[in-house]
Length: 306
Image (cartoon, rainbow, N blue to C red; front, top):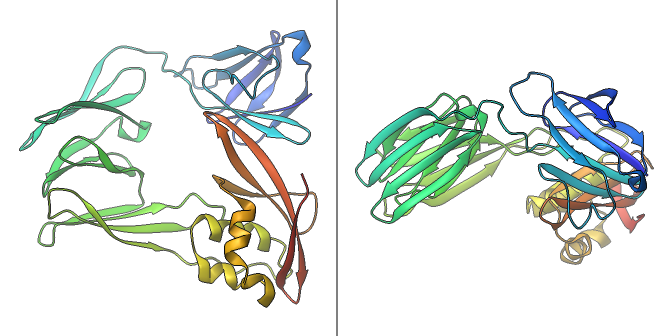
């Protein structure tokens, strides 16, 4: 079986005690047999995280290894390691604040977390490494945890209404508005600008504005991938612009044809091929492949290839 090894951080890859190269966001490909029960190890290069070890066996689509995301491919399987634990598990306070509606503490212990204690009860949550150094400040009826290139906005119950990477954010005290510009996470590197109304008892998302797509290459080779991203982002007008007149009139049916997916990826199998990464269960995904037929720069037909 062909196995693609990827990791969220640079790692040395070991199989049955033998060094097999390095992994990160680019795949390291090996031919392995689950029948031989090979011991696979991701060894973080920086030493700040513990190694992630597991025995590669059959049934990955039912029980993925802990800390590993599994994507089923037509020619094998991709294993993406991202569940590394900190080597230092000591408890360390990061930031704390007393708020009008409760107390909020950010601490590090095998990861970064927050603890909220208020009238509604106690709530905990996980934060990314970007909050390993942060500050807490009240805003309107809510709270902001501000990290390095990231912000987490919590309501009065300690529930996040935005949490993650952010290129920019601002809290308008006069209008009680929180504005956040964050990476959209698509292949084009676009951003999404959010405006939250924080004047009431609960936050309300007033606006969500996406940055424009960059121009496609003249040969249109990424048109299908772009179409999938417009469907995922519910950008109907941009999607119709990529389609022939007949196919554009069937956009709702086309959306049903592709179904639910969490990401779109270009595929090298054909000039106008793309794939969808579809969740099957927790930490298990399947890649579905499609190919487009182009005419005069527009997609006139789409077919499933695997």
